[in-house]
Length: 72
Image (cartoon, rainbow, N blue to C red; front, side, top):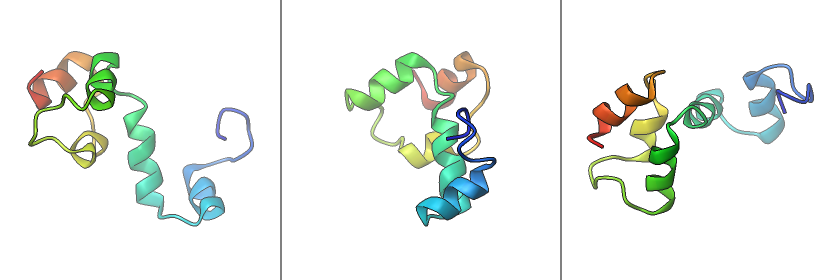
């Protein structure tokens, strides 16, 4: 929605979808995850103590730091 110009902000997306702003922000954060972390999510291969919430809240920008944070 943002890339196409359909929505101008995350707040606008949240309003359109009827969901909380913070939820939209966390979901957008998941798009910055390293490809191998995404694969681990899809394969249900993350360490048991890691949740999607853990990954979605303030993820490091660098993929290597993401891996270190979750122990991959």
